[in-house]
Amino acid sequence: MAQLRMNVQAPVARLFAKRWSTRAFDPDRPVETEQIAACLEAARWAPSCFGEEPWRYIIANRFADAANWNRVLKALAPKNRLWAQHAPVLIVALAETAFSHDGNPNRWAEYDTGQATICLCLQAATLGLATHQMGGFDPDALKRNLAIPERMHVMSVVAVGYPGDATALETDFQPMESNARTRKPLQETVHDGCWGEAWAPPAAAGWEARYQESAMERLPWFHHGLDADIEQALSQLERRSGTLLDIGCGPGTQAVALAKQGFSVTATDISPSAVRNAGRLAETEGVAIDFRVDDILNSSLSGAFDLVIDRGIFHCFPNVGDQQAYLATLRRLLKPGGVLLLKCFHKDETGETGPPCRYDESDIRRLFADGFELIKARNAQFQSAVMETAPKALFCIIRKL
Image 1 (cartoon, one colour):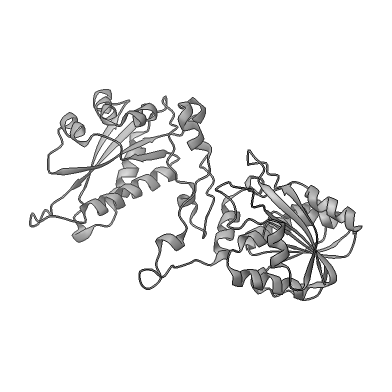
Image 2 (image 1 turned 120 degrees about the vertical axis):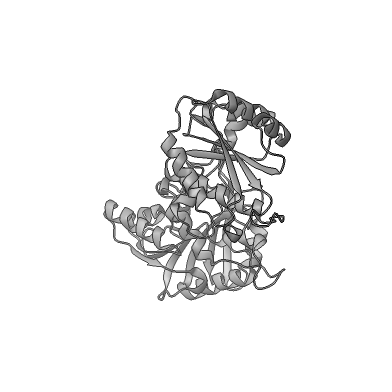
């Protein structure tokens, strides 16, 4: 199973989402020649400058030609050999560095070989195969061992095989198989119009991607049943009925639990997939909830609510303008004397994954100073079935003045 993608920013085809570089291969299952041919055919149809097709591949198959497979394996870096020894196929990717029509250097040869090789890997993923491209190898040893011409540039070695048991790997590699995948945000790698102007995707696209790709129970913020901090706050406030808005309802578990307690619940999320999934949960549980696709920063909701639940939205807004838009929406939607139950990451939480903002009590007092009153703040945790350690949280009861 592919690792969970953590900081997704837009929906992509399932093929791209599930491709990843495992180190766990089934050592006893050969790759069929037809499967290898399909991967190479995908590479063959990659684009290239002048249609030069500068890529060349050497297939080393442990089940068909153990001698040459061993020659490739021995040229790998020692750490790569520890896991690559289980891959039934090792493919050496080469670039022909000169144009065939005039002999001049082809400065796009390496780029085009990379294009062809990712096509090979994506085709492998569609066939249920695993791949892992390696840069850790001795190119001179490969050239000697496989009689590769000097003019060829050795680009990579690709391990190919069927996925195997990650627990059979060396201990050092096992966390790499289970840790969630992350990437630099698009704002760091894409420029808008000219260098230095960051390009940013719409925030809604990232949430939609997450809900399209992940089963509800695998989401880090999934919590079966009503959050204990919300339950405790409702008891303290002696609230068991009234109009309630659950913003960023996500899987819908909180909205369903609150509807079962007798609240008239409106639940919103910026992701259409989240809203559809939550609606199905409510139908299964036999409760009536008004689900809406809505952006709290530009909300189309009307009416006034006795209670608003925010279990993990406010801490996603590092931009001051977004924070002010959030507060303006709350002022409009909460009745006078209405209460916001806010749960966010605490400043004491130092984990690298999670939302961009973390707060303590003084931050909340400052940010909600205009038109709100902080009734209570206490340290809490975000309970999660998929995270080994529950992140530190701050739970707040905030009243609209």
